[in-house]
Amino acid sequence: MSYEIKSWPRVLKLASNDTLTCVAPLRDLPGKRMVCKGEWQDQPVVAKIFLDPGHGKRHFNREKKGIDALRETGISTPPLLFAGTAENQNPVLIFAELPSPQTALQLWQQAADDTQKTELLQTLLSLLAQHHQSGLQQKDLHLGNFLFSDDTWYTIDGDAVDSSQLGTPLDLTASLSNLALFFAQLPPDSDDLIANVLDSYTYPRGLNSHQVITQLTEQLSVVRTRRRQTYVKKSYRTCSEFIRQDNPGQIAIYRRDCDTERITELLKDPDSLIERGEILKDGNSATVVRIPHPDGDWVIKRYNYKSFWHGLKRCLRPTRAWRSWGNSHRLKISDIKTPKAVAVIEKRLGPLRLGAYFVCENLSAPDAQSYFARDQLDEKDSAAANLVTLFKQLHKLGIHHGDCKATNFLIHQQQPWVIDLDAMREYRSRDTFLRRYQSDRHRFLANWQCDLRLQSWFVQNLPS
Image (cartoon, rainbow, N blue to C red):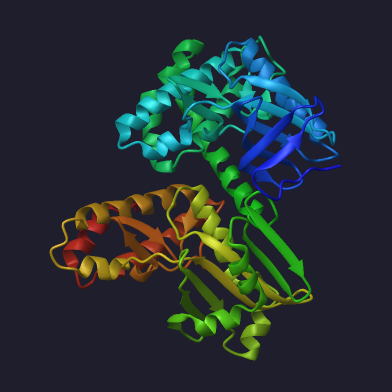
């Protein structure tokens, strides 16, 4: 019997005859596991409830084994208060709630400059060196698995801890692979920090930083590409972040955290919403509208067929909306700003794609052309430098935008946000990408023919 929490708070009776009060969800993987804040024996706790009737017990045992390994090696992890089952036999782990915890990811996002980022990375690498020297590695290593509370760093998510080599330091190959996974979580423009922080890992491990960084750089590119591709594929299926619905005549994918009423209205009749929206663009190939809402406006882009033959030619290929959805998440995982994708809808007739809609959050910001045309704008130099940084990121990752007109870059708080993603493509071949990149670069520079000073600056600073 599987236990799903539908309302909050909710009391869960344990097999030990006491109760766990689940107060608020922290993470929900429907049918698999639920992590929630709660109360147990008059103390604040965090509970992990394993819901999968087929694999829940295995994940429970793996989580507990990882926690025990962390404790055995002296690595701090939140105290485990209870390991057992609910009355309905769902496995349950209950941990003491740490006071005012912050994840390493939150601290990274709050870092004001490279100095603070460097200090954070040095601390985390020292902790990672302790893991590896003890024979432990996190298979799902990310910044959310480290918590800071009361001047102490804690490692969480025992399910991801591989303790098969407990007591034997990891060899160089395994260490580099795990290190590359760690650095792959960070945006590519942070790679310049690696050389400054690597000693925090190599010194306690007795390794040579110069030898390690060469091999690490090679592995990092591979891991980052694999991580990006995995996330894009994940965005097309039901998981903790997205819901996919395959119905006769329509396939839709949308964010799990969407308001139920809004998403239901969208899926039922997107054209009706478009008719009521504010038109931003009404062209032959696409209609773009803004849908106002108190909880945040949406932008819907409907891809139109220009003619019967145009539709026939495209109906067997992934739609531009479908590609926009994947590319939105390609940028997200790469820490490149783009308005958050909300949903994608494809109208289908068997294998034929008859129409498509891409929905994202609205960002009220001027495009780059309008932004740089303004007079007496003190932040222009900073915004221009940030645009160059964006192009360097795309260049490093091998991502070709495909339509680099200035209106496809919005400037918000001096930072560029990329839109119009349906022509974007990531290339495995570096030579092919470099040829495609030249067209992106040429098109972007053509935007500034009326501002030769700015154009000249971009010519000198954009990757060539």
